Image (cartoon, rainbow, N blue to C red; front, side, top):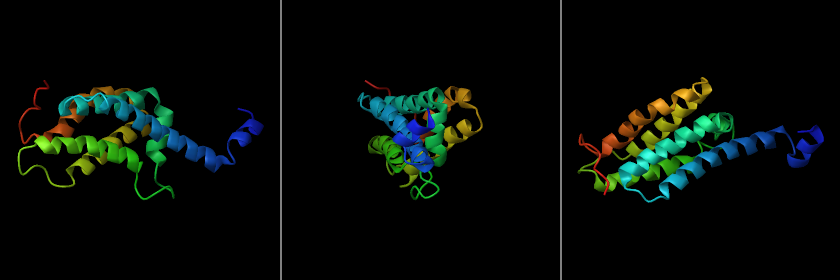
Length: 158
């Protein structure tokens, strides 16, 4: 992109950086939203959500990495990740609480798992290990589902 064109599109480098961060987070949200919109049963939604996050991170490493590494730090907001993305993942996990055996997991479980999932993806991208993400899918899905199953296997979807 020519310098003149760059400054026609963006007022300054900070504006371009913010655009990149927002675009990276948007890509992740869109991938997760598309997967969750399929209306599958909870175990399949969690599996699909993890697949969507990992596939998007691997396919668009630079953009997604920018969004995850810088998204709400350095004056953008109050947390380390895009609050809308965290809430999307947290909400998908929260749905598992409805069918969990009582008393269910502690109140902050969904949020803790959402942050952990995004942290692992972010760290792998930061270390240039995007190709290792696909191999983590099964373990990630089990870790996300387990607190809601109380030792049982994920129920079969009908």
